Image (cartoon, rainbow, N blue to C red; front, side, top):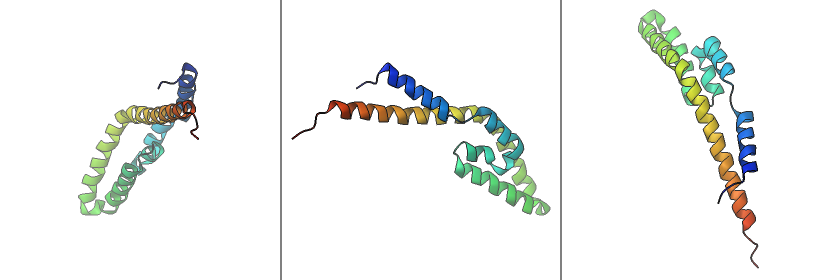
Length: 117
């Protein structure tokens, strides 16, 4: 089963409309990155919570010197995230595209089947 060109165009339009903004992701990363805001925005809640907890635990234990190492690790993670954000946005677009294409193919398949009596 294949979908029509019109359906493909509609799918791409919906992917564009539902895509996360790269600019918004980078603004969240820059201003609220240590709180994991950019990861929450991109749908990566598990790692967003991890970054938030690292920030809290790091600042609470900074007087014990352990917190310094936690905050350094978080800083490295945030630096790496600066390069990962475009890939995370592309993965989200691919996921939306796959879901919409699957739904369209199922709709085409069910429309072709005739009711049985």
